[in-house]
Length: 237
Image (cartoon, rainbow, N blue to C red; front, top):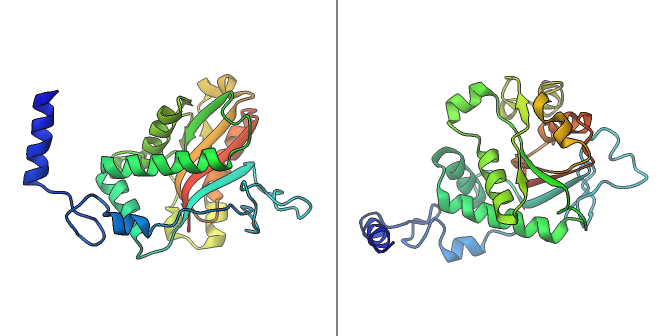
């Protein structure tokens, strides 16, 4: 243990940590930049975006009509050229452990704040899947990393139950095309179908926009007779 500590000290001395935003020698994100990140203090209806304390759909306005998940909990609002975008990019493409720890702590905080009573019973944490082709490019599914560590943090079951056909990249499509591009493209692995029955699901992703990806995941999960699906995401763009 002492040797490992010395090695870490030497590495920190030779390669001091810099803030990914202002480049101050402090940490992956200095205290000043970290304090500028605003965690969402309330949630909204996933469809019409009216205020909804726990991120559930509006009643009486048919907001939930075309959705398969039951709740959406967000941590941040996402936009380009921001500190959050830099964090997400560094996490996705460099897999910086410190950023992963930071994100998982925020996910845990928001989930415990906005989840309903009973959502820690009979729970399975599931990541939004990537296609095999995309994993070959990226090297790893970042949503899976978040989901695994989130489950570990709360001592919950983690299971990578979904698989995904390769389709055109959602980020390159217009809104209307995104809504149809993923239709019938995500499925539950057959060996997990009976395991998922009557389970509460925490479905984890990094960034959601139209919610088409998490909705397609939820469609597949509901076909496996899951009970309740809470989508937990870092941000919505």
